[in-house]
Length: 183
Image 1: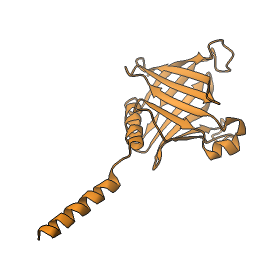
Image 2: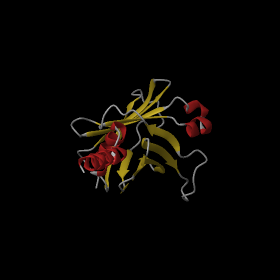
Image 3: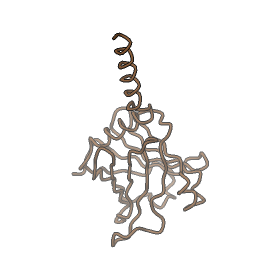
C-alpha cells in the first residue's frame, strides 16, 4: 500500500511539473498584469530618443491607449499626432510574450507592412520585456532583422517606455506618464 501511495504522489508531482510556468512565462504574465491594471486608460508620451528632434515622431502628440485586455492579449493603440494606424499587440504564447505591430489604413484594412515583432524569450524581469525580431519580421523588413523592441515599466510604476534598438544601437524611445491618465 505504501508503494502505491508513493507511486501516486510521484505521478501527482510530475503532473504538477507540466503545468508550472517557466521564469519567462511568469515574468511575461506579471508584466501583462501590470499593464492590464491600466486597461481603459490613455497616456501621453514624448519622444526622448533621439533628442535632437530628427525623428518623424518628434514634436508630435504621442498617446498610448491601453484598450483591450484579456488573460492572453493586450491591445494598445498608439497614436502619433492624428495618425491612428498603429496598435501594439501583446499576446501570451507558449514561449513567452509576443509583440506584434498591427498597422492599418483608415478604412481598417491591414497595411502592407504589418504584424512584425518578436517574442520575449529571456526577460530580464517582470518590469521589462525585450522582443528580438522574429523570422517573419526579417523576411518582411530585412533592415529590421536585428531589431529589438523593449517595453518597460519603471520600478516606481510611473513611466512606461517603448524602446527600439537596431544592430544593438539605440534608435528610438518614447516615455509615457502613467501617473496622469488622459481619461
